[in-house]
Length: 208
Image 1 (cartoon, rainbow, N blue to C red):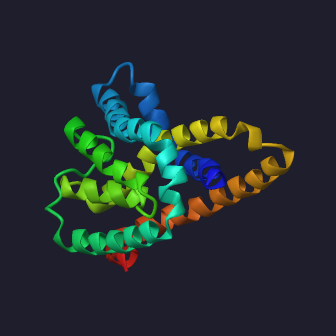
Image 2: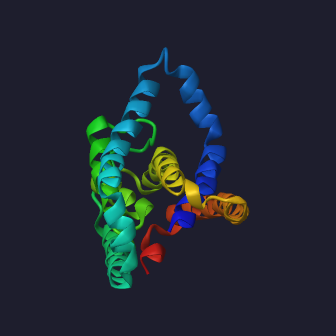
């Protein structure tokens, strides 16, 4: 379980690489542009619910829920059905810019992200469903989910790395490095591919 969390830092870095130009532009405009500050605050607001719940329920999640294949299977099936439904019956989109979502919308997306603490529930799937229910356009929902992954998974990485520091000997470090690099390279292709599929076909293929 620790390995699975630690290697996701590689996938997070791929998001940073893919969106680097936009993120860098926002960072430069934070002191002078309210829109840039709104995005950063919105991302923080969306991050906090899962961060708080993750810290409080960390041991329960890793020691109990992750040990139940039944929970994981049920979560995957329910998640697939929900994706099929939201793809067909989502409200009409009102928000078409991931960098300009209202703060209330960001908070509700953050609440949905907490569902991903249950093993088998996709973090991106939960946030995308929450986003689309709040009127976010489907491709924009995916982009915001990817951007939100940066603080969320970075935080999970730091917590797990610290709590598992005694296990991170030289042998384990090498294994993690291989997983890290692989996750980074694969995520570069997967994120681009997912956005293309979502734009053309929506979320039904992922639901199935």
